[in-house]
Image 1 (cartoon, rainbow over the protein chains, first blue to last red):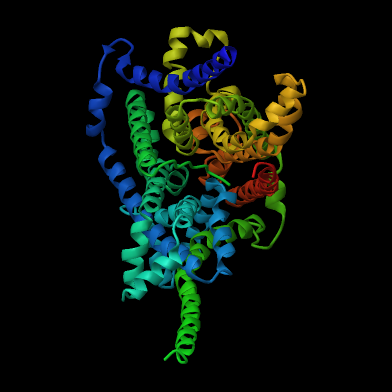
Image 2: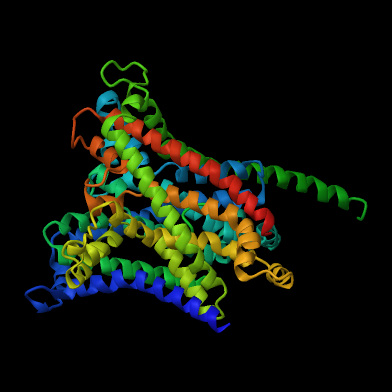
Length: 270
Length: 294
């Protein structure tokens, strides 16, 4: 047994080393600048660097919009599938898994092509204005559309797990027997029971949008992740400092969530 | 009173059922319409563009042929090689870690490792890349203090990327394999021991055959994840390692040659086909492993 324990702690030790060292080294990298000694400049400079506020704000706005849209689309659909229409269940499952087969880079290649249709084919139709409007750099709606699609698999799994734990038909019937109307039954009986799943889905979507780089960069917008890469060229210390901060904040959020919602594990596929 | 009750009861029940069914459609249709537009249009654009000749506008397979030649083929092979090597390594390294986690007596430790794995597996990207640049890059902390450059270390190379990719692939492996390891019955080990098997024999003849579908499925899943990764590679290597995702980005933005957009779409279609193949292999394997470990 002692040998077994030794083996186990060896494995944990090595894994811990591999997973902690890059983080620790990053912190050292940001505070121990060659030639300057110990300094916290990299962290104090973050806020005053141009683009930090606006890109973070843009990312947060995009995240909120994505969460709102994806929940508005998914929650009624998933609840309705539990109440009836069982034939639609596999359809929704497949639709929500499809984004996993299309890597983000291939997805964005498609989006770029579709956006070009605007000037090429539709310049005389009212649709052209829509194409222009969704690419407004102040708030690119096209990114929200893309992120909602990319979040579908995560949100599907989170909501499915939550709905599996409760008996939706009984809840709704009980609420209806007590005289509640349909919207009332959904909002006041079903949704409160889904609080954990909704939070889970929201946080996963938040983390996805805050860290998303591929789509935003190739469409030419500058939310947070793209900004980090853009400043890294001129200010290496600063970009690492921001990276460390954003990693820690994301992990903290998700750890809090995991502690809140019990054991919640996520895999990117399957 | 009792005679009328069944009638009163059944008629609304049927109506409720009908209403529920129509309610189901009303609630699901927005989702389907949304995905048809936001996902279906780009997907159609990729397929259509990949098969369209940019000059003439006629349908042809020229783009697909071009996407499998020269620098593009090198990039495709580079991506496959990188993904295969890092997925294989992550499978080999993730298994003992998962086993150590599963057999640990400390519940808190298990929960912490599994939660951390969930986070690491999904949300690395750009920040992760910069953490590694700060650690093992040319001016990285470890590189400077240990003099790694003299020893031939280079983060901006094939093996450098493997080390970075393992950071999110190993946790993904731990997540994938843990349920299977939890499903290994203690009785199987005891039975093997009673028959005089050593630990090595137990693993070779009992545990590994049961775990094999899960391990293979995990490998395929990791391969797909590494294959699709773009942000990490773009932030670290620029284009010093040929990867298909970097080629697509270059072709899309017209960095190298103008007018390569349709080749980019053909490359994207290649990627979708590989990802589809990955899922086609993964799903049956997952079903097979579920049979043993139910």
